[in-house]
Each structure stands twice: as C-alpha cells, then as structure tokens.
Image (cartoon, rainbow, N blue to C red):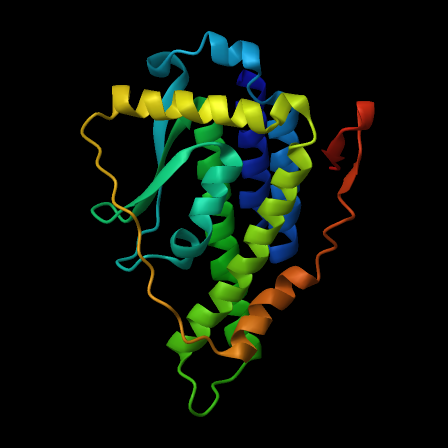
Length: 237
C-alpha cells in the first residue's frame, strides 16, 4: 500500500497547488479510482491483515459550526467508493472514517477535494448570479449544493460500477474487506456508538439546483473510461 499512499500525496499536492474546478475535481476522482484499482488490497492482503497494523481512523475538519453540504450529501458515497466506514462528529465538526490505511488517506483526500470544489463553485455562482426577488441566498446555496452533489455522487457510482467487472476489485472482495473493517472498528474503537443520520428535506430552487448540475454536465463522463488489459475497464489519466 506504500505505492498508493505516495501517489495520493502527489495527487493531493497537485490539486492544492492549482485549485480544483468542477472539471478538475471529476478528473481527480477518475485518477483516484485508477489508483485504487491498480494498487488496492488483494485477497492475499486481506488474509494477513491486522487491524492495529493495517487500519486507522482519519478525519477531515470543516472548520464551520453547521454541517457542510459535502458531509450531508457526498461523504456516504465517498466512503463507499473508498471502502471505509464513515460518520460525522458533531463535537469536532468533522467527517471521520475508519478502514485500511491507504483507503482512509484516499477518503481524506477526496472529502477535501469535494469540499474545496463545492466552496469554489459556489463563489463562482455568486459572482455570476445576482440575487433574485423572493429567493434567499440560503435556499440558493443548498439547492446549488444539492445539484452539485447529485452529479458528484453519480460520477462515483459510475466509477464503482466499472470496478465491479474486475475480479480483483469485485463485489466478493469488497464484502470481505468491509467485514474486516467492521471487526477492526470494534477492536480499535470499542467505545464508538454511531447513530443513523437523518436529513431534513430541502425545498429546492430549481434554477440554482440546475446551475449546480451544469458544472458537472460540462464534463464528459465517458471519455476517461477505456478498455484496459484483459478487457478490464481502466480510468485514463
């Protein structure tokens, strides 16, 4: 897993240096998926895994009092994509995750990427869209973020579907891996008690929500995916 950890750091540094637009965020997700496919855990790795050696807890702190839309709308899918267990900590205002070391680091990277991308795209929306009578900025904000999150989650689902065709990253391996993660959580975080999250519905503004989707609609979803060696689908760089 040393290879994937080094490449995650390199990918994180590249994004942080130049910022992440919606298109760049989607490209980074594709590269992240390629890293996880090429360097992820194998069945042999799982057979010899030890929680205290191979697993850890990680977090991304949002630095705001209210829950960020990244946490509300995207973290659950990011966690599934990375193969970790995730939860929101009200005390530390953070998205936390537990799993294999490289997967947790990928989770932290992707949560930060999506968080920063959402904030940046919202600033662009504010610049290009003056206030409208009868529509509060608060409503526009959550509507825009909901539309953007919908697009990001769809991208993650597409990438996971492409993975399932490979025996090395297929459903059976994912199930076995998550069983080990859950056992590791009980061993290393015995005091942790998770509650099922409840989200209130949003009376979305259609215009703002569509603007959130448009940022993602400009990205060609099919272009990065190509047939790799042995007929496997790989994500192009």
